[in-house]
Length: 329
Ligand code: SF4
Image (tube, helix red, strand yellow):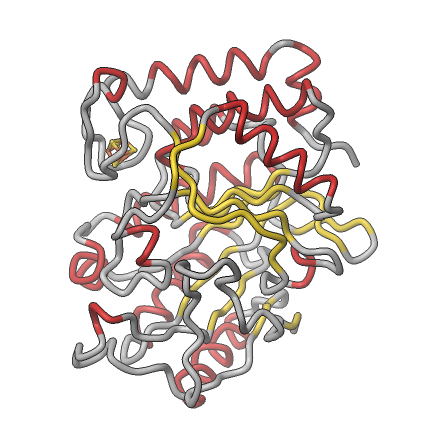
């Protein structure tokens, strides 16, 4: 199964999509923050980015869901900054502290080709939302150099569906978070009350494009979607609200990944709820509820409440715990 963007590239359509995205950055509406700043004129909105790209790390990632990591790793590119900036962000060095370096379109296309030459199974853009114009420009450039791997769009779920519509035919696999089903929780932790509304609309658009299943070639993902949910300590009702929203408004067939790996980062180390890992009981409560609701494609993790599993983006290899794979259920 060929990567979807190759057809757009052959027709000259990929360039046109990049141009459409560019137009949305001149009065920036790339995400639901709708900052309406002209990022080409040096202005910055909530994400603190102008028109250039910044990345932190590039690596074959062996800790993603098994169909994404496969045997050779997902070809991950971690973009700097974030349009959500949750107070507990597990990648806070990148999203809050803006760790990273500036790169241009030619650099990023070379990075994609390098990941392909290292036998990665896909190109996985992590938090590409504020960078999406330059990212698609780089994809065009990489196609000219022979890129053919499936494209994974790994985002926080706070997306503008009109922008996602421009990515129809560009993305092969969507990997969105669905973080909050409760507006009070999203307001408390991410400063937005409307997260769940935008998440549902975005997921529906993603599924319109790629379907509500994950298609594989052998054991490796080629097209589709996995919805991720990071279970937060003391917020089980929020997790259950997320499952109910997916069931009611998105799909019961969609693969979901229930993540147990939450670890408190320094900014919330003493937070009354977020200052600990989750318990096995909390995790099993959410998984059991998902099973009882009728979800039948669930990726699960082991709960490890003794060892914290935070990546350290000050190191060359941030994921020392990569061996803790997710399992299908
Ligand atoms: S991408 Fe950045 S500048 Fe644009 S709307 Fe979102 S947060 Fe604001």
